[in-house]
Amino acid sequence: MAITRGSIQGFEMKAYWDSASSADTPTWVEMPRIKDLTIGLTKNQADVSRRESDFQLFGGGQKDTTLEFGWQYRANIADGVDTVYDALLDSFLNNTPMQLLLVDGVVPPASGETTRGWKMWAVVFDFGDDQALQEGVVINVVMKPTDVYNGSGLLVPEKYLETTP
Image (tube, rainbow, N blue to C red; front, side, top):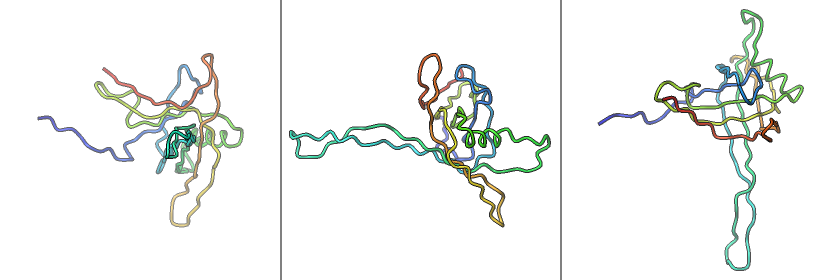
């Protein structure tokens, strides 16, 4: 009988951003200095109650997604550039959309493996700087999906699934 792994740890998850900002041919770059990523998924409730039932009835409404994470700030990078920090700051200052891929493995997955997660275009709404005396500096980031279009129409958050034969 084959033994399979049960759980996956948070540090094994991967976050990528599309450095080319292209919906059709993204260039996925890993964001390795993310700390404690939370993907909040909620759905509004639509009241569908009517007189034929003694109970109040509900249907699912629009969904809400919020991404919250810390970006470990690093000074004096060899080339002086932190492209992820710069992209996050640009998104905050100029409402520049960033395409993100938040998955449970590497992209592309290894042979015979499957990677799952979420893909979405989002904008930074909070870009707070946590400078605790006894800790490394962390930029606290909150992102939400935004409206981005291509030739096919509106690009909404979607489940991501990729399997390599």
